Image 1: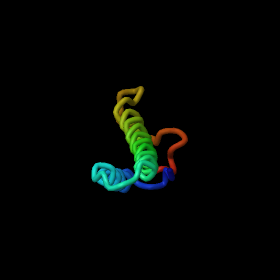
Image 2 (image 1 turned 120 degrees about the horizontal axis):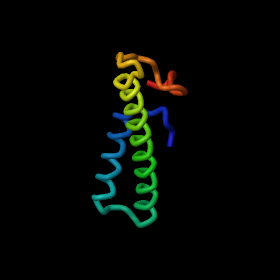
Image 3 (image 1 turned 90 degrees about the vertical axis):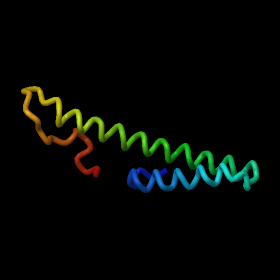
Length: 79
């Protein structure tokens, strides 16, 4: 699963995938493939949420007590 997709796009695709799975209109192989796709989307969403949480902690937990906007190391190019 491409990690360049936004969190919001990932959530929309995940919701669509869940709807397809819940419909029950797929063969077992199709459902398994759809499930694997959904798991990948969940992974992307979790990674984006964890990254956002780390960035918020950096803003809130400045060592000197001052709020800073220093980006998390290694993620400066990630939006």
